[in-house]
Length: 139
Image 1 (cartoon, rainbow, N blue to C red):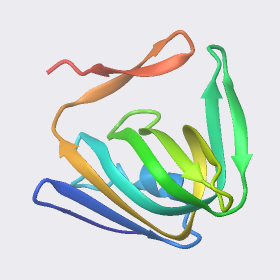
Image 2 (cartoon, helix red, strand yellow):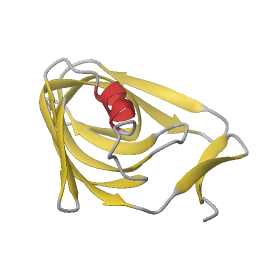
Image 3 (cartoon, helix red, strand yellow):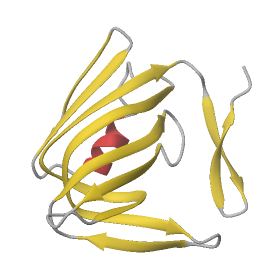
Image 4 (tube, rainbow, N blue to C red):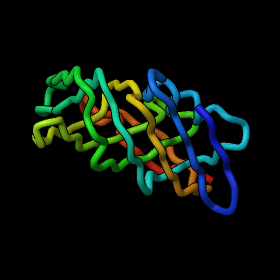
């Protein structure tokens, strides 16, 4: 994983075989990473993907093994929270079928290029029912 933080933009480049989700967790621990970063865009390919669907009680997991195009992503990364990211993705397979859901795990296939918008807004996660949702830190 390579990254640059400059001019109100964070650019992350990941290469084939890298663990996408572990890289995201590492990224929020970087010294100059902001309190919060919102995903603006990401493109590339993923493989060995685990997507979750929350049915109100638990996550139902769906696994997609083969390479898939990363067609869309939305989410936020937050420093000092658990979990440190919350992403929803849409992927497309070789036959043009699309799948989407809460990203649980994925590995890079070929490359992923990601762009984030940093923010100094400090957030925390609070447990509400079975979900850890975002809330504002007192400051």
